[in-house]
Image 1 (cartoon, helix red, strand yellow):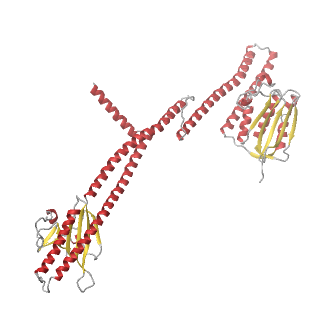
Image 2 (image 1 turned 30 degrees about the horizontal axis):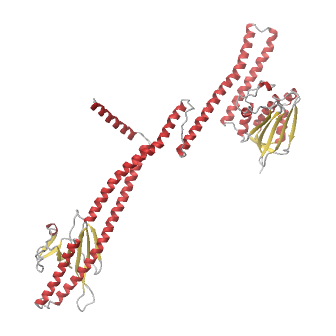
Length: 547
């Protein structure tokens, strides 16, 4: 049983890994991006280090080999001078002493090649101008005629197999393997070609220089052949391998550490996002109280704060919606109940015939009030949706105020209220939708009339607020509004305490419509009121400029 359980756990881990690979996520995206970035940067830095190491070691070794080449060149010139000076016209040695001098120079050249081989691990080749090998170290077979064979080593078979042997002379198999350039140029070759042969397992550095000889009585140097010194560079091979191994290991370590760091970092990012996802689902199901705690000041913190603000706004909107529905239901249910009761009384004969006309008149008034309420609701919906197109035209301010107020003279006179004007905007035009602003003035004047007793005064004032706006004031000497109620008077269905109002038939939408109309004009309204002394509603309108 434990074995089976362990197998199930392994399968579960595999499934989670496969799910992680297939599922789009920020963590997976980050991991893929970082892995690619690390590998790419490692490759670039590895190549740079690889090339730099090779160049550095090559430059260092080149200087050593150049000095050795120059030294060998001098010794060869001395030996060849001895050779020329000790031969007669027929090509025979002039004396045994002359031959010994030449032999001595030859052996010194050989010994010097041997010395460089011992010190620097150099393999040297001295070639004739026709490509034949005059001298080498280690020695080639059949080249010990002048050399002491004791203590000398021969070229390995893998080298000699790459040469041609003809009439006692060794030649390169390919002419491109030897150099016969100008007298003072160097040819530097780093790689698998080593002046004499190629090797794909070791790195060598080879330097070749022409042997220039000036015969006695002549001024122009003649090319007698070349000197090629090759030195193995196991350090380069080792360094290359070390670099490759280092960067492979370091890349894996970097990727591993980056993945761990990304897991930690992305959790800091994804956890709030998951919380946002969960809270969003809660909001979609109607739970607007879900909030996320965060002290972060970064973009995620700002996003969380925005979400919390949105959730709070939705919660407030939901409360307002419920209040709105409740208010509409109440405003419609009350007259509907009255209408139904009166109609049932008439149909059942409970209400005597002489009283029926009175109650039918009440029914008519209630129906009118319901019609006004419905129209106000429709107007509010259009205004708040932003779908109302305003017909903006210039109108004289004073004419607008006077003509609108005159339309309400019957109800003002009925209540025996005095209407006064205090206008200071003569010949000033405002850019407005006339019908909408008339509705604003009518609602404000009606509201003032409703809360002003007989003998009271309603004053309409106009003045310049600044260079761009006109300030309109509708002031009354009515019952006023308490400080506790002032913040709510522009809300839908909000009614000031009916005990202070003489007209109790309002819908509670008048001031809300006023605010919405002015908002559509990009204007504002405020109220100042003193309980028992009256109220003052102040709003602005934009001035029309012909230019």
